Amino acid sequence: NGRRFEGGTFEGIVKKDCTLEGYTFCDCTFSGCVLENVRLVRCAFSGCRFTGCRVSEPETLHSTVSLAVLTDCALVGVDWARLLPAGMFAEPLEAMKGCRLKYNGFQINFRKFTFSGSDLIGCTFGESELVEYDFRDCRLDRTEFFHCDLRRSDFRSAVGYQIDAAANKLKDAAFSLPEAFRLLHGLGIRPDG
Image 1 (cartoon, one colour):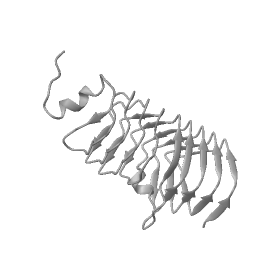
Image 2: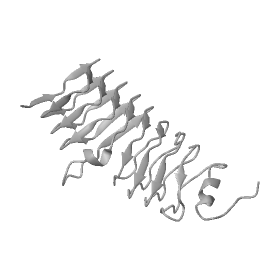
Image 3: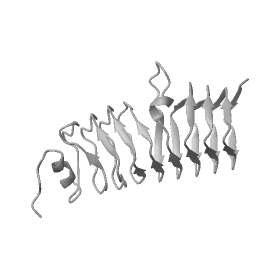
Image 4: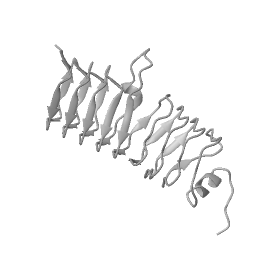
């Protein structure tokens, strides 16, 4: 019970309310594919590219994603901590551009990643090392950061984020006004006006 694909191309595949078990995809390309309420059991995606795909509320069990490139994708309810390979240093994401993430959970530790230009709505970053991340021009409505290392990260032109300045490391991080005033709230400071 399992299949392996290397360098394959998958277009317009739609899977809903089903279980995919024992699949391995290496350096594959997915375009316009949809996964809704799919249970992924012992599946692995390594070095795959996803363009215009939609993933909603996946249930993952012993499944991994490494070095994925996402372009113009919509992801709802993905828990990235559950997709990290055990004992491996491979990063789950290599690149992301123009994506919309909603209710995604991140507990990740890798450096210099860019979310720039993507929307992260209602997402959570917890106990993560996000050093030198690029969140420029991101819509971060109701996205929370707690106990994260955000040193040297760039939030210029980002809007909607919720960062408790006392509970996160922010040294040398960049912010734009008026959004930067949100940081003062966590310190109990009220800006005038």
